[in-house]
Image (tube, rainbow, N blue to C red; front, side, top):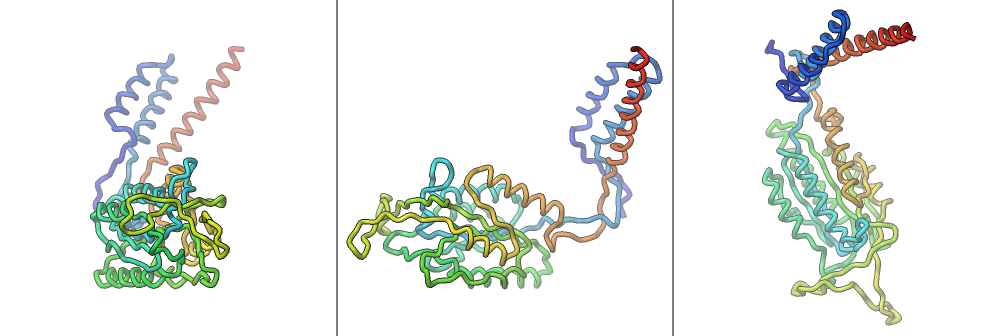
Length: 332
Protein backbone atom coordinates (compact mmCIF):
# COMPACT_ATOMS: atom_id res chain seq x y z
CA UNK A 1 0.00 0.00 0.00
CA UNK A 2 1.22 3.48 -0.88
CA UNK A 3 2.51 5.24 2.26
CA UNK A 4 2.58 8.74 0.80
CA UNK A 5 0.34 11.36 2.34
CA UNK A 6 -2.09 13.23 0.09
CA UNK A 7 -3.31 16.81 0.31
CA UNK A 8 -6.30 18.49 -1.31
CA UNK A 9 -6.29 22.15 -0.21
CA UNK A 10 -9.53 24.11 -0.14
CA UNK A 11 -7.53 27.30 -0.79
CA UNK A 12 -4.22 26.91 -2.71
CA UNK A 13 -1.57 26.46 -0.04
CA UNK A 14 0.64 29.42 -1.14
CA UNK A 15 -2.40 31.72 -0.83
CA UNK A 16 -3.26 30.26 2.56
CA UNK A 17 0.36 30.69 3.66
CA UNK A 18 0.11 34.37 2.80
CA UNK A 19 -3.10 34.70 4.80
CA UNK A 20 -1.41 33.04 7.78
CA UNK A 21 1.55 35.44 7.58
CA UNK A 22 -0.86 38.39 7.67
CA UNK A 23 -2.59 36.89 10.71
CA UNK A 24 0.78 36.56 12.48
CA UNK A 25 1.77 40.13 11.63
CA UNK A 26 -1.20 41.19 13.75
CA UNK A 27 0.82 40.05 16.76
CA UNK A 28 -0.82 39.88 20.16
CA UNK A 29 0.79 41.41 23.22
CA UNK A 30 2.51 38.95 25.55
CA UNK A 31 4.44 35.85 24.58
CA UNK A 32 1.74 33.46 25.89
CA UNK A 33 -0.96 35.20 23.86
CA UNK A 34 1.24 35.15 20.77
CA UNK A 35 1.99 31.45 21.31
CA UNK A 36 -1.75 30.67 21.29
CA UNK A 37 -2.14 32.82 18.19
CA UNK A 38 0.70 30.95 16.46
CA UNK A 39 -0.83 27.54 17.26
CA UNK A 40 -4.25 28.66 15.98
CA UNK A 41 -2.77 29.93 12.70
CA UNK A 42 -0.81 26.67 12.20
CA UNK A 43 -3.98 24.64 12.81
CA UNK A 44 -5.88 26.75 10.27
CA UNK A 45 -3.14 26.07 7.73
CA UNK A 46 -3.23 22.31 8.43
CA UNK A 47 -7.03 22.15 8.19
CA UNK A 48 -6.92 23.89 4.81
CA UNK A 49 -4.43 21.31 3.48
CA UNK A 50 -7.01 18.52 4.02
CA UNK A 51 -4.29 15.94 4.67
CA UNK A 52 -5.26 12.35 3.93
CA UNK A 53 -3.45 9.21 5.06
CA UNK A 54 -3.41 5.85 3.25
CA UNK A 55 -5.98 3.28 4.36
CA UNK A 56 -7.03 -0.15 3.13
CA UNK A 57 -10.58 0.10 4.51
CA UNK A 58 -11.99 3.31 3.06
CA UNK A 59 -15.26 3.60 1.18
CA UNK A 60 -14.50 3.91 -2.51
CA UNK A 61 -17.32 5.50 -4.49
CA UNK A 62 -17.59 4.48 -8.13
CA UNK A 63 -18.43 7.33 -10.46
CA UNK A 64 -18.66 5.40 -13.74
CA UNK A 65 -22.20 6.19 -14.81
CA UNK A 66 -24.62 5.28 -17.59
CA UNK A 67 -27.45 7.79 -17.91
CA UNK A 68 -30.62 6.84 -19.79
CA UNK A 69 -33.11 9.55 -20.72
CA UNK A 70 -36.67 8.37 -21.41
CA UNK A 71 -38.53 11.35 -22.87
CA UNK A 72 -42.21 11.90 -23.61
CA UNK A 73 -42.49 13.56 -27.04
CA UNK A 74 -46.28 13.53 -27.46
CA UNK A 75 -48.42 16.54 -28.35
CA UNK A 76 -49.14 17.23 -24.69
CA UNK A 77 -45.45 18.08 -24.13
CA UNK A 78 -46.05 21.13 -26.33
CA UNK A 79 -48.45 22.55 -23.73
CA UNK A 80 -47.46 26.08 -22.74
CA UNK A 81 -47.44 25.99 -18.95
CA UNK A 82 -43.76 25.62 -18.01
CA UNK A 83 -42.37 28.28 -15.69
CA UNK A 84 -43.58 31.80 -15.02
CA UNK A 85 -43.43 32.69 -18.72
CA UNK A 86 -45.52 29.68 -19.75
CA UNK A 87 -42.95 28.19 -22.07
CA UNK A 88 -43.53 24.86 -23.76
CA UNK A 89 -42.92 21.84 -21.56
CA UNK A 90 -40.58 20.35 -24.15
CA UNK A 91 -38.40 23.47 -24.04
CA UNK A 92 -38.04 23.04 -20.27
CA UNK A 93 -37.06 19.42 -20.92
CA UNK A 94 -34.36 20.42 -23.41
CA UNK A 95 -32.85 22.93 -21.00
CA UNK A 96 -32.90 20.47 -18.09
CA UNK A 97 -31.33 17.62 -20.06
CA UNK A 98 -28.52 19.96 -21.11
CA UNK A 99 -27.91 20.80 -17.44
CA UNK A 100 -27.92 17.13 -16.45
CA UNK A 101 -25.43 16.24 -19.18
CA UNK A 102 -23.12 19.08 -18.12
CA UNK A 103 -23.25 17.80 -14.52
CA UNK A 104 -22.26 14.21 -15.33
CA UNK A 105 -18.92 14.69 -17.01
CA UNK A 106 -17.46 11.42 -18.26
CA UNK A 107 -20.75 9.52 -18.19
CA UNK A 108 -22.28 7.59 -21.07
CA UNK A 109 -25.70 8.74 -22.25
CA UNK A 110 -28.57 7.11 -24.13
CA UNK A 111 -31.97 8.37 -25.28
CA UNK A 112 -35.38 6.77 -25.69
CA UNK A 113 -38.35 8.84 -26.79
CA UNK A 114 -41.99 7.89 -27.07
CA UNK A 115 -45.10 9.15 -28.82
CA UNK A 116 -47.62 6.51 -29.89
CA UNK A 117 -44.57 4.22 -30.17
CA UNK A 118 -41.16 4.07 -28.50
CA UNK A 119 -37.90 4.89 -30.29
CA UNK A 120 -34.39 4.05 -29.11
CA UNK A 121 -32.81 7.11 -30.73
CA UNK A 122 -29.29 7.17 -29.26
CA UNK A 123 -27.51 4.10 -27.82
CA UNK A 124 -25.09 4.55 -24.91
CA UNK A 125 -22.30 6.88 -25.93
CA UNK A 126 -19.77 9.20 -24.33
CA UNK A 127 -20.36 11.62 -27.24
CA UNK A 128 -22.91 13.66 -25.33
CA UNK A 129 -23.38 16.02 -28.29
CA UNK A 130 -25.27 13.24 -30.08
CA UNK A 131 -27.84 13.12 -27.29
CA UNK A 132 -28.03 16.90 -27.05
CA UNK A 133 -28.63 17.22 -30.78
CA UNK A 134 -31.35 14.53 -30.75
CA UNK A 135 -33.09 16.14 -27.76
CA UNK A 136 -33.00 19.60 -29.35
CA UNK A 137 -34.86 18.22 -32.36
CA UNK A 138 -37.79 17.00 -30.25
CA UNK A 139 -40.88 19.11 -30.96
CA UNK A 140 -43.81 16.84 -30.28
CA UNK A 141 -46.02 15.12 -32.81
CA UNK A 142 -47.96 16.81 -35.56
CA UNK A 143 -51.73 16.82 -35.23
CA UNK A 144 -52.08 14.37 -38.11
CA UNK A 145 -49.98 11.76 -36.26
CA UNK A 146 -50.89 12.56 -32.67
CA UNK A 147 -53.04 9.94 -30.98
CA UNK A 148 -52.77 10.90 -27.32
CA UNK A 149 -50.41 10.08 -24.50
CA UNK A 150 -49.78 6.67 -22.95
CA UNK A 151 -46.84 5.94 -20.71
CA UNK A 152 -47.28 2.23 -21.36
CA UNK A 153 -46.01 2.36 -24.96
CA UNK A 154 -42.43 2.85 -23.76
CA UNK A 155 -42.43 0.08 -21.16
CA UNK A 156 -41.07 -2.79 -23.30
CA UNK A 157 -38.40 -0.71 -25.08
CA UNK A 158 -37.40 0.75 -21.73
CA UNK A 159 -37.03 -2.69 -20.13
CA UNK A 160 -35.26 -4.24 -23.13
CA UNK A 161 -32.71 -1.41 -23.10
CA UNK A 162 -31.95 -1.72 -19.38
CA UNK A 163 -31.72 -5.50 -19.55
CA UNK A 164 -29.39 -5.43 -22.57
CA UNK A 165 -27.12 -2.85 -20.95
CA UNK A 166 -27.01 -4.85 -17.70
CA UNK A 167 -26.05 -8.00 -19.62
CA UNK A 168 -23.37 -6.09 -21.52
CA UNK A 169 -21.85 -4.78 -18.30
CA UNK A 170 -21.92 -8.27 -16.79
CA UNK A 171 -20.09 -9.74 -19.80
CA UNK A 172 -17.47 -7.00 -19.64
CA UNK A 173 -17.27 -7.20 -15.82
CA UNK A 174 -18.08 -3.48 -15.80
CA UNK A 175 -19.81 -2.37 -12.62
CA UNK A 176 -21.15 0.97 -13.84
CA UNK A 177 -24.04 2.76 -12.20
CA UNK A 178 -27.27 2.89 -14.18
CA UNK A 179 -29.16 6.14 -13.74
CA UNK A 180 -32.53 6.81 -15.36
CA UNK A 181 -34.35 10.08 -15.96
CA UNK A 182 -37.96 9.39 -16.92
CA UNK A 183 -39.41 12.62 -18.32
CA UNK A 184 -43.11 13.20 -18.95
CA UNK A 185 -46.25 15.10 -17.98
CA UNK A 186 -47.79 11.80 -16.86
CA UNK A 187 -50.92 12.30 -18.89
CA UNK A 188 -52.85 9.28 -20.21
CA UNK A 189 -55.62 10.56 -22.45
CA UNK A 190 -57.37 7.25 -23.10
CA UNK A 191 -59.55 6.47 -20.08
CA UNK A 192 -59.45 2.77 -20.96
CA UNK A 193 -55.64 2.73 -20.92
CA UNK A 194 -54.58 2.18 -17.31
CA UNK A 195 -50.98 2.68 -16.21
CA UNK A 196 -49.05 -0.59 -16.14
CA UNK A 197 -46.44 -1.44 -13.52
CA UNK A 198 -42.81 -0.46 -14.08
CA UNK A 199 -41.65 -2.39 -11.02
CA UNK A 200 -39.79 -5.13 -12.92
CA UNK A 201 -37.39 -2.49 -14.24
CA UNK A 202 -36.20 -1.46 -10.78
CA UNK A 203 -33.68 -4.33 -10.58
CA UNK A 204 -31.66 -2.72 -13.37
CA UNK A 205 -31.64 0.80 -11.91
CA UNK A 206 -29.26 2.22 -9.31
CA UNK A 207 -30.73 5.70 -9.18
CA UNK A 208 -32.22 8.58 -11.10
CA UNK A 209 -35.45 10.52 -11.05
CA UNK A 210 -38.87 10.87 -12.61
CA UNK A 211 -39.21 14.46 -13.83
CA UNK A 212 -42.71 15.86 -14.22
CA UNK A 213 -43.63 18.81 -16.46
CA UNK A 214 -46.85 20.79 -16.62
CA UNK A 215 -49.28 22.31 -14.15
CA UNK A 216 -52.71 21.84 -12.61
CA UNK A 217 -53.96 24.91 -14.48
CA UNK A 218 -53.01 23.23 -17.73
CA UNK A 219 -51.72 24.63 -20.97
CA UNK A 220 -52.87 25.02 -24.55
CA UNK A 221 -50.79 23.50 -27.33
CA UNK A 222 -49.49 24.94 -30.58
CA UNK A 223 -48.74 22.21 -33.11
CA UNK A 224 -47.80 21.65 -36.70
CA UNK A 225 -50.86 20.34 -38.48
CA UNK A 226 -48.78 18.17 -40.83
CA UNK A 227 -45.21 17.07 -41.38
CA UNK A 228 -44.80 19.67 -44.14
CA UNK A 229 -46.15 22.57 -42.05
CA UNK A 230 -43.71 25.33 -41.16
CA UNK A 231 -45.84 27.22 -38.65
CA UNK A 232 -47.22 26.15 -35.28
CA UNK A 233 -50.94 26.74 -34.84
CA UNK A 234 -53.19 26.54 -31.80
CA UNK A 235 -54.54 23.02 -31.44
CA UNK A 236 -58.33 22.92 -31.86
CA UNK A 237 -60.94 20.36 -32.79
CA UNK A 238 -64.71 20.05 -33.22
CA UNK A 239 -66.65 17.99 -30.71
CA UNK A 240 -69.62 15.75 -31.50
CA UNK A 241 -71.89 18.78 -31.47
CA UNK A 242 -69.67 20.74 -33.89
CA UNK A 243 -68.43 23.10 -31.19
CA UNK A 244 -64.88 24.36 -31.69
CA UNK A 245 -62.80 23.20 -28.72
CA UNK A 246 -59.35 24.41 -27.64
CA UNK A 247 -58.07 21.56 -25.46
CA UNK A 248 -55.68 21.88 -22.54
CA UNK A 249 -53.19 19.36 -21.19
CA UNK A 250 -52.76 18.84 -17.44
CA UNK A 251 -49.95 17.21 -15.52
CA UNK A 252 -50.85 13.90 -13.89
CA UNK A 253 -48.58 13.61 -10.87
CA UNK A 254 -50.41 10.52 -9.63
CA UNK A 255 -49.10 8.57 -12.62
CA UNK A 256 -45.63 10.08 -12.33
CA UNK A 257 -45.38 9.23 -8.64
CA UNK A 258 -46.53 5.70 -9.39
CA UNK A 259 -43.76 5.27 -11.98
CA UNK A 260 -41.21 6.69 -9.52
CA UNK A 261 -42.36 4.30 -6.78
CA UNK A 262 -42.16 1.33 -9.16
CA UNK A 263 -38.65 2.26 -10.31
CA UNK A 264 -37.48 3.01 -6.76
CA UNK A 265 -36.38 6.56 -7.57
CA UNK A 266 -37.52 10.06 -6.58
CA UNK A 267 -40.11 12.22 -8.28
CA UNK A 268 -39.49 15.92 -8.97
CA UNK A 269 -41.90 18.49 -10.36
CA UNK A 270 -39.90 20.66 -12.76
CA UNK A 271 -40.95 24.25 -13.30
CA UNK A 272 -37.81 26.40 -13.05
CA UNK A 273 -34.00 26.41 -13.09
CA UNK A 274 -34.07 26.17 -9.27
CA UNK A 275 -35.91 22.84 -9.48
CA UNK A 276 -33.23 21.58 -11.86
CA UNK A 277 -30.37 22.72 -9.64
CA UNK A 278 -31.96 21.12 -6.56
CA UNK A 279 -32.53 17.81 -8.33
CA UNK A 280 -28.99 17.66 -9.74
CA UNK A 281 -27.40 18.64 -6.41
CA UNK A 282 -29.31 15.90 -4.59
CA UNK A 283 -28.40 13.36 -7.27
CA UNK A 284 -24.69 14.20 -7.18
CA UNK A 285 -24.74 14.15 -3.37
CA UNK A 286 -26.16 10.62 -3.38
CA UNK A 287 -23.45 9.48 -5.78
CA UNK A 288 -20.77 11.20 -3.69
CA UNK A 289 -22.03 9.49 -0.54
CA UNK A 290 -22.24 6.12 -2.26
CA UNK A 291 -25.98 5.80 -1.65
CA UNK A 292 -26.59 3.78 -4.81
CA UNK A 293 -26.30 0.03 -4.47
CA UNK A 294 -23.48 -0.52 -6.98
CA UNK A 295 -21.49 2.58 -6.13
CA UNK A 296 -19.93 1.59 -2.81
CA UNK A 297 -17.12 -0.81 -2.05
CA UNK A 298 -14.29 -1.13 0.45
CA UNK A 299 -10.75 -0.86 -0.78
CA UNK A 300 -7.47 1.00 -0.64
CA UNK A 301 -7.60 4.75 -0.60
CA UNK A 302 -7.13 7.73 1.69
CA UNK A 303 -8.81 8.83 4.91
CA UNK A 304 -8.90 12.58 5.54
CA UNK A 305 -7.63 13.62 8.99
CA UNK A 306 -8.38 17.36 8.90
CA UNK A 307 -10.98 16.74 11.62
CA UNK A 308 -8.16 16.11 14.13
CA UNK A 309 -6.78 19.60 13.53
CA UNK A 310 -10.33 21.02 13.58
CA UNK A 311 -10.94 19.53 17.03
CA UNK A 312 -7.64 20.95 18.27
CA UNK A 313 -8.55 24.35 16.83
CA UNK A 314 -11.93 24.25 18.56
CA UNK A 315 -10.12 23.50 21.84
CA UNK A 316 -7.70 26.42 21.48
CA UNK A 317 -10.52 28.80 20.51
CA UNK A 318 -12.43 27.71 23.61
CA UNK A 319 -9.33 28.38 25.76
CA UNK A 320 -9.00 31.79 24.06
CA UNK A 321 -12.63 32.60 24.77
CA UNK A 322 -12.35 31.63 28.45
CA UNK A 323 -9.09 33.57 28.85
CA UNK A 324 -10.42 36.81 27.40
CA UNK A 325 -13.70 36.43 29.26
CA UNK A 326 -11.76 36.22 32.53
CA UNK A 327 -9.33 38.97 31.46
CA UNK A 328 -12.03 41.49 30.62
CA UNK A 329 -13.94 40.45 33.72
CA UNK A 330 -10.95 41.50 35.83
CA UNK A 331 -10.60 44.78 33.93
CA UNK A 332 -14.12 45.71 34.99
